[in-house]
Image 1 (cartoon, rainbow, N blue to C red):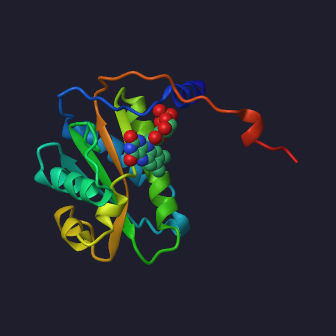
Image 2: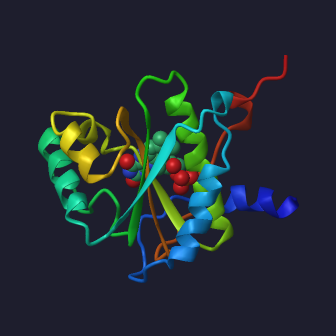
Length: 175
Ligand SMILES: Cc1cc2nc3c(=O)[nH]c(=O)nc-3n(C[C@H](O)[C@H](O)[C@H](O)COP(=O)(O)O)c2cc1C
């Protein structure tokens, strides 16, 4: 549908959120979009963990990221969103990173359809795959043998930004 194409064109990364939490029904709608994403050989090896803003694990991850980077940014990695969804996947499966990325985009676009804002979060990868990997995997309820792939902050937007620009001619070839 043409509205879907408009949605892609208008989406932007949300780096400011309203206080309001999402209902479980709304969260389930976007998580279901994640489950509906295709996976290689239909392995369905991606797991989704929803963490609320108040959960102390978010501050612990922030602290570990900052320790590894030797810097404390002005805003935390989830921009005080009411929820963060962590995607983990089977460490041993070749397609896990791509499958998690596809599920991530399904969630982002489902959220946009529902009038919500999202931010894809890669910056905590070193913290979640470093020396505290096992501790964080346990706190985030990753299944055995799974590792962090990507995270998504989600909530009602309190921030507006123009969509990014792009150069069609540089990035697309017809041969
Ligand atoms: C794999 C991936 C990781 C990202 N990690 C972060 C991040 O850690 N922090 C952040 O603020 N934005 C992050 N972003 C958002 C990008 O910076 C953003 O998508 C890009 O600048 C284009 O802007 P737009 O999403 O508003 O179109 C990430 C995006 C992707 C796809």
